[in-house]
Image 1 (cartoon, rainbow over the protein chains, first blue to last red):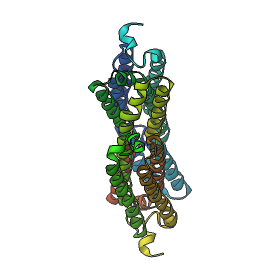
Image 2: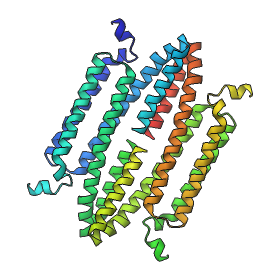
Image 3: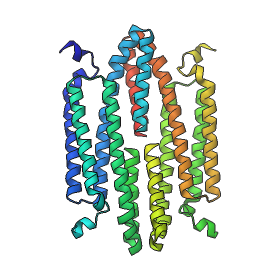
Image 4: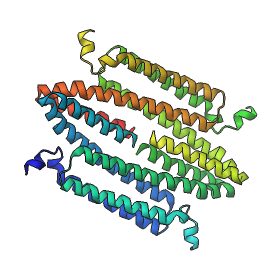
Length: 99
Length: 99
Length: 99
Length: 99
């Protein structure tokens, strides 16, 4: 693993995230097929909800990894960098909760 | 437009929905690229939030069309079908709010 | 039941909504007590999540009643009023999904 | 300030949180008044959305304080306690995002 990769909280789970994102891409294609085939609105909405949940699950995983690696490392190092990392993570959480 | 298409609330906006879903599919590919390139977790999370908002916006549009066409038609026709359509729509809204 | 009450979709379930809202008010007081007693942040957050779910559940109930009464009535009457009611409901759903 | 208070991340902002929670309690009472007075469903839903946003805002504030104090302290101390705190925070975030 390169130094660069090691510096990312999700490094270890990279393949898993890629697999989940490919599935989400497939869900986006599946939705286009449903619209093209004039499927029933409610069935499309059910798939949109499933895709939103899958995306949220990826986001929560990334956030967990980020807290456990980047934020914890910054906290250990201390100083203004630690505060900045916490603020940055809190802002990302707020965007997630409100999106 | 076929009879089948006409029966879907989103019929008129079909091209617009397909365009938005293709963009969402592109966002899913963009996220895979970010993970492959070891981009910073917070930047990935920002893109996930943007993609979630885009998906929600599609869902709200579909729901609006559904209420304005399928539910209104069923209400005019009356009877148990109207109640069933309202319940079905309410359940879809609940899944959306909770996803 | 007065004419006024009858015109509200939630008329029949009024007592049930009041009971749930009183419980939610109690949850708000419980949260104040937890903060005053310096309870652990995570335990407070768990209670906030429970209270948010209870509120959402009230909102989904009201929305269901609204669709089943006000929107269905307007749809039967037809005309611009029906369109206005659907738009109004869709806007309320959007606020709910995004809040 | 007692040692106990100092150990809570929200210690400094305690008065502010209490003020916001009292306002939220007031919103819950206002909603009961609206239902009692048979106010229009959509107006009630608008108030529910405002109250949900106020609650979420309190939750995000508490989470921010928690990350900046409890989690950062645990990270500095290191060991399994740090991992446990990160997991606990991530679980609280997941409940918040999904509620």
